Structures are given as C-alpha cells and as structure tokens.
Length: 243
Picture 1 (cartoon, one colour):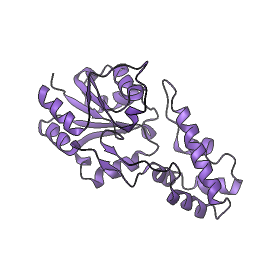
Picture 2 (cartoon, rainbow, N blue to C red):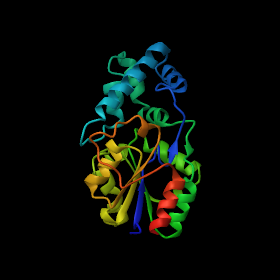
Picture 3 (cartoon, one colour):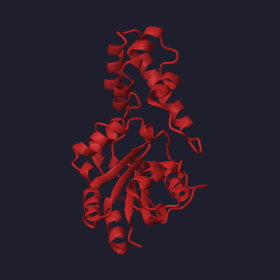
Picture 4 (spheres, helix red, strand yellow):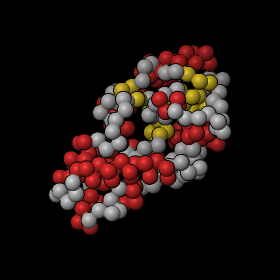
C-alpha cells in the first residue's frame, strides 16, 4: 500500500554526525563564562559528562514522559553547584540546551534529499518525530539544509512532553496530519525506541534505517521492523516499490 504519510526520526535517519564529546569544549567555555568562573572547566566538563549518562539512563524508561529542559539541568547537571552558579545557569537554559543538542558535524544522510523530494512530489505529507533535548536545534538544521519546507509538521519530545517509545509522539504527528496511523510509514534507527513506538502506535509499516546506534543496540527482546534499509536511497527504492 502506498503510504498516505511518512514519518521520520531525525538522528540516524534524516541526519547524522561524527562522534562528538558529550561535553563539547564550546559549551564548557560558555558555562564557565556564564557562571563567572565559579567552577573550573574540568568540573563543568565532569558535570556535563556524568549528567548526560544519568539522563540517558533515565530515558530508558518504558513509557516515558519527557523531562523539561530546566529539570534536566537541575537534576542531572547543576544539583551540586554553588547556588550563584545554579542561578546564573537557570537564566540561560533554552540556549544551553540548544548548544548541548547541536552537532557541528550534522549532515543529511545519503539519499535523504532525493527520498523526501520524491515523496512530497506525490503529495504525501512528511513529518519529523524525534526525541531531543532541543527541538529548536533540529528545526534550525533542517532549515539550514533547505529541507524544512518539505515537512508538514515536526514533533519533538522537549516540546511534546513525551518521548519515544511512548506512542503519543507518533499520534501527535498523525493527528496533525489527519491521517490514521495504519495508513502511515515510520522510519527510525532504533528497534528499542522507534520500531517499538511504531508498533504501539499501530503504524502501517515500521522501517528500520541502520545507523551507528542500530549496530550498538541488541535486537533481542524488541520487535522486528517490516523492512530494513541502509540510507535514504534505500527508502527511495522502497517507496517506488509501493508508490
């Protein structure tokens, strides 16, 4: 069946980036200046690194709500900082979250522009459905690369208040599009989050696009996708088979 809408994850599907430090030097320096040197850069780096690990562990909950940006920083990063440093950090949470989510090496995955163009040329709407600390960073990247206009809606966990594999993420997109989930495709790079989310949402086809995250994730205990592809060109080929 030709899909009536196609939903795509961001990281590992639309875009990818080389490995990056959990605590980028630019973010450490921004925080160091913001808190007027109340903590040395090494301690700021440690707080970010340990905080990211703790946040990642929390994100593995089964039916998760998303944690507001301010709570992420309060709970995982600045809890043991001096009170003045905490207060200064709170004044810049949206910008700091943006910088933490942003990847300088982001690039569209091979074949993605071609696949997005082919799908929209058939008047099939596209949506982004992605977990992130800052949807604004993802929106800006898609705008910068000239593809944001192709998406009818973009759903990000920090804005939605829930995160995959909670099916509400997908339902937010399909409700906006006005298209029943069984008539849609969803493309993600994680069995644990994306394929499971698609199954819970009753999506018509759950498609796994392999990425570095896919290769480090055990497939045991998680649902299998309907199709497995390598990149945007694989999506384009699959679409032409059904279109």
